[in-house]
Image (cartoon, rainbow, N blue to C red; front, top):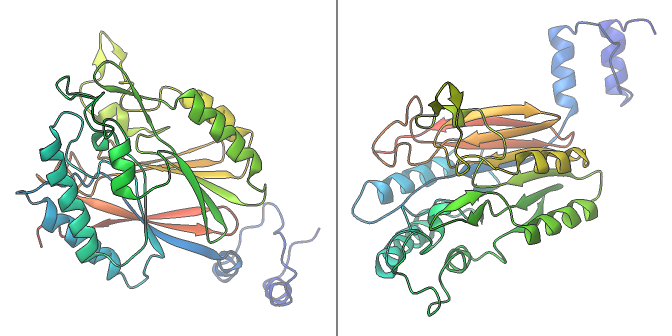
Length: 319
């Protein structure tokens, strides 16, 4: 096949006949614009994570500032995704303290946000796992139920469709000795396999989890070099990452995965899936930057060809 002249290229595009470009042909600037215009953005979504609200701290005003910034963007998002750690800590606190944190979360959303928001549970949203004095048998809010009620979500893991993309929300945390480990339980894994099978092959999929399934920044979250070897905590990255990677690879329409938890920002492209870890709205727990990363949120663009693009917004959290 002979290389297109620029005139032929533009003529074919105008007639709707542009399907491919000759391999090895370097596109001119005008032609690159045509190719970029050939894909259509289906969704624009603000991704917030690790807000860590609590009373009597910079958190309420900082969270409100993040929401105001999202809603005042010139290119406004269609909705918001929240991937957890919404309250400062529920794992080890008593119920009245936790209720105060959820009150701040809910009142801020009610008063400062007009966009639809979808939620994912974070480890700090789980009540009582790290507190041996919590009477788990006498209070059905113990564990993850309280967070699902506060978020108004149908289950601790679930799936929804928006704008032609499917979003699968995972529950990253499994109980482990007054703490947690990052992996999904067998019940959830079986559900995930069935969910991936029933989603049409031509519908692109984005996975949402609080803890990263795959990330680079876990190497820099605390002291990890011991006796000359990297030692990565099973609380920082999914222990079942290979199992999930293998499952995603069977379904080529899995295109992206969003997470938080580490309060650092990275992007890993592996086997056709882009894994985005998108920092923290609270930065260093409302004390400024966490290493090189100030408080931030992400804006994600989702396209009809399965591609995604990320914009990081560093907002004025002291406003």
